[in-house]
Image 1 (cartoon, one colour):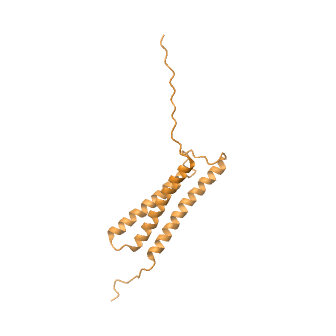
Image 2 (image 1 turned 60 degrees about the horizontal axis):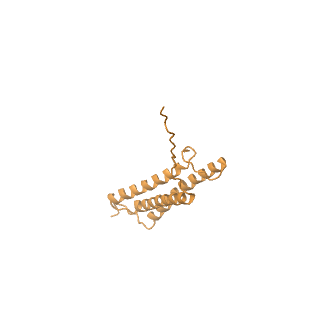
Image 3 (image 1 turned 120 degrees about the horizontal axis):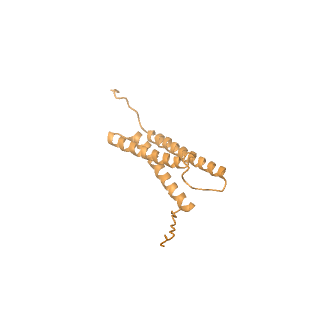
Length: 129
C-alpha cells in the first residue's frame, strides 16, 4: 500500500539584526524630519500657489512618515516581534519612549521650520498706499 511521504518545510523569514533595524528606522525618521522642516519652512516663504502646494505635500509626507513610524511601536500594534529584552514590561516602556521620541521630534522640527520660515519676513498691508 502506498504511503504519503512526510514533507517538512521551513518558513524562516529574514529577521534583520538590531543594527540593520536601527539604521532603517533612523533613516526613515530622518527623511520624515527633513520633509517636515523643509515643508514648514517653505510654506511660510512661498510666494506662489504651486510652491505652497508642493511644500504642503512635503509637510504632509513627512508627518505621515513620522506618524506611521510612531504607530509601529505603539502597544496597540503588537504584530511586530521585536524583543529588546526578555522582560515584557521593559519592552513596552522602550516602545512607548520610541513613540514619544519620534512624534515629539516631528513636532519640534515643525515648530523650528515654521519659526525659521517666518524670520526676516516683512509683513506689508495690501492697502499701504
